Length: 169
Image (cartoon, one colour):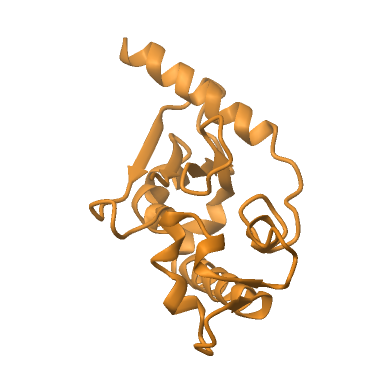
């Protein structure tokens, strides 16, 4: 049973990797600024955001004017990307791993239901590889999938495993 589950999960994760299309520009994708700025006024108020995103509103609204501008949104996105890049620089095994970020695993367009997929650049076998999955803690109040590489990276870098780090709602 475990083998069947591993093969099915690997098949699913591999199909995600193979179907990877070029990502849209930052802030323009399905979870980006445009999606929530329905009236196209160039700003976001708390009532435009889904409930799960409102908790971060105060942190993103850096000028405290009561609205999130596209510049404030992009500053947060760029800060998160810099953090991701610093993790890769401080994690030397990342050079042995191909990362395919933000892959939806549910039939809905929710950024909280995406995973990062980690594939070994040098596989130890042509056979399907088992998957090591990182599910972060946080009691549904904190945490995210971005820390997954540090946990599953050594397994993936060995070439013996595929890794995934899952975001959930």
